[in-house]
Length: 397
Image 1 (spheres, rainbow, N blue to C red):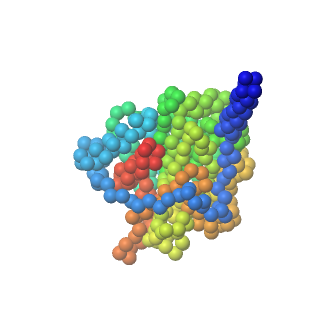
Image 2 (cartoon, one colour; image 1 turned 90 degrees about the vertical axis):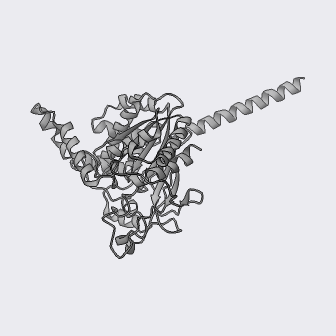
Image 3 (cartoon, one colour; image 1 turned 180 degrees about the vertical axis):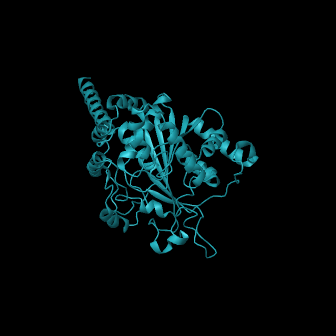
């Protein structure tokens, strides 16, 4: 009897030690290294995916009442899957240069305008965003109408939100955006077990990567919090919001995101990446095919480390240079030239779908400008249903 009891206690002790080790492993901060361009994609981290035929969308006007019964039924099916999985919020994050202050000119005017008692900054930003919406429409840009149609088509119980940020092309702007996105997500007061589906186009995906590094958190988090403090963000307040958001589960989908920042994925955070791609090899297109977008999305391969613009102030330029050690080169033409020759296509964080969206030029006429070099297709009304199906099948089977 004593032998049996001793054996039981030993087994219990070993089990407890193994459980403690497993919990420690789960809580270990992710390293979140920036993309290593010289490394080939690992097998099992990507798949070629055909563009499946779906019922067409009616673009004019892009409202739910104008859509066919087949299109609406297909989107309602997606909505059912999301609700069954606990998704309560879908957030759309646009990419670079289509936001409310892409040059940060309005932010620079904030101090003088406040000193004069003029609260014009929100109005100026609203006008800037409405102007880019008129110019670009749904070409590489999430319009308000697009988000409303998506949310309405899913059915009740899921809130669809368009998140706006400056869209300036450097580390500091994206970090500010991650802080603002944290505020938006926390405002919904997510409950434990609830899910939020976050969609990021282009460098909107980098904003989502920074969000995960702050929320879960990663080894990079202390330096990122310190950087936020340096640019005037309330660190302790944001940390409390991050703890609130960490109660929920985040499902992240990026579209045309250049492979750059690391994601702190884990049991409560998943990431999938969708790239407009042509060919059987997981490599970006050759420069010779750019006029007809023969390789797919060229902006996705060009917007890598080193391609940023320098911040406008000396203080932020110095801070951005320090963040290079965590996030990869920001503004560095030499580094960009070294990286771009590797033709990176597949992110090293999460799973990637390489999809031929069928926007290659035909008939001898270059189509690079009309497709934004293959980068504008993801946010189009025509791709909405396919993208929704793809994400529902990947995340919510």
